[in-house]
Amino acid sequence: MKTGLHNLKLIVSLIVLIIFDQLTKFWAVTQLKSGKVISIIPNVFELNYLDGGNTGAAWGIFSGKIAMFIIFTIIVVIILILCIYRISKLLTLNCSLNTMHLISMQYIITLLIAGAIGNLIDRIVNGYVVDFLYFKLIDFPVFNVADCYVTIACALLIIFCVFVINDKEFNAIFSLKKDDSEDKKDK
Image (cartoon, rainbow, N blue to C red; front, side, top):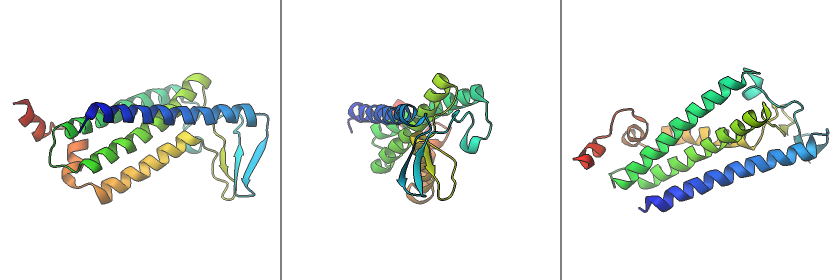
């Protein structure tokens, strides 16, 4: 596998996802901040800017703890990048692991990183996260595209870890121990 080209695709995917998230938030600020509400599906789903933004996490928990979120997000992103790097190393070793599973995991983790960075940018630039997507039908907390990335990626990670990848693949990706196949390559 040509890992250079593959890694470039991951980076481009990450950049495109982050740009899309930031463009939607910019649009929301310029079009909805004045109080305008756009009903997509009447009484079900609307675009509705959350006045004052979200200074916390999901459902506003830990509201106002911006520094904590910035530090936590940076640590999580570094760990996730290390997982992608580890998977890239496994792909270059041509080990007995399922290549499609490994590549899929990289894209899922990339989606998670994009969501984390999208909201991190908001916290650093604005001091809050811009939220504007609202499921009115169930009065769900207002959210944004980056939140969708994180939610979808977490759901896919759970599905992959429980139903798709086997123990050997899971341990190769997430174990803190050095992989045996890496030892063999080093010798």
